[in-house]
Image (tube, rainbow, N blue to C red; front, top):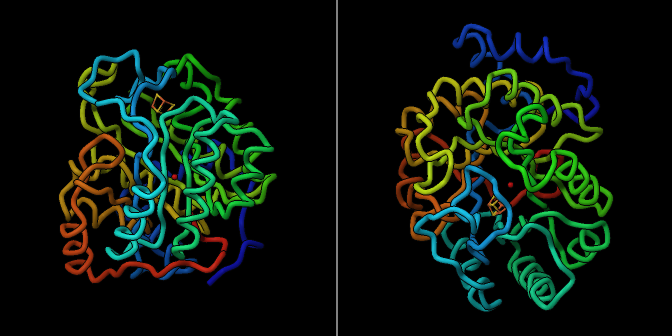
Length: 331
Ligand code: SF4
């Protein structure tokens, strides 16, 4: 396995675009080669994502069914009790997950009782021996430190899309706010999970720009989720077309080549992909998937755990055991 001294942080848009636009077979071959140099290619990390507080979010992310301002079918749910969350975490572990991510539909973390309860959840999941991740919105440096002290392993804060396209998708915060939170997470010594969504109406150059921001960070995010837009009825983007699978494969392959040590997570959108389409994504370097209980990923449909296990078996892949704190771990 290669080490982090081989990583580049000075990619240009032209270089990334040239990679992204390579003939597909060549692109996948190169990404698969990088994947094998940095990772065990027969292992897929299973991460479980649980919504611990659902809906009612004041933000206006135009892809999200949890934004209070959109009329979706999603039921608002207050912060779950700690015991309930820990029971879900235990079940996830029993089902083969090595990472457990807790998501709250908040704009930002506030220093209140709910945050105290999140801290208890982090401690509890950590004690179960799972990598524990949270995605809670914007975070200050002191809040990040509190989470780190409680045992938080990773914090998810996606860039969502390119800096250039950002204002088309979200108006209630700025791209720079995302970068600021990621910096606070880094300062606290928590690993970073940050990626984005394709199929929002962006151009390939936006995808490249987003990847360039990630690849040129001083330290690459340990985890890079690549999501296909889940078109939620009632949101402004509900009528956009399904993203083409080859676009997804190109995005994953390019991410694998420029972020070789990172876990590249095939995230939202799998429900609309066949086993064969997902296999292409794994060949292109994706080495993690998300599962959610009741066949949901937060609030959108997702394949069930049994279905995923059958797929992995069919493809000769196996669930990754919990990682030691290496450069290639994970929102
Ligand atoms: S993506 Fe997150 S921040 Fe944006 S509306 Fe949904 S829950 Fe709120």
